[in-house]
Image 1: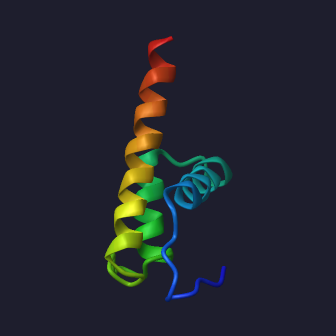
Image 2: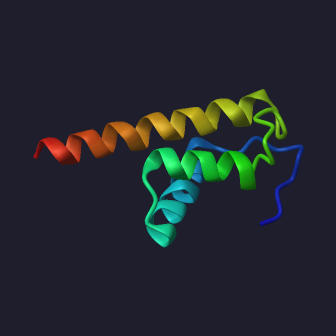
Length: 73
């Protein structure tokens, strides 16, 4: 996947990306986050800037919240 360093990736982008990792590799959210850190961010959360990093964290929180809501029902 090619990423332009000049643009900010959105929360929705990362939600799709993390869900793809989780579904294709049968990973938990924690495992998907670790995979993305190593593979996408190459071990540097500021690789694509602070704004992109914040969007990544928002995506993780939203997925976690959604997963918790599903478990309740």
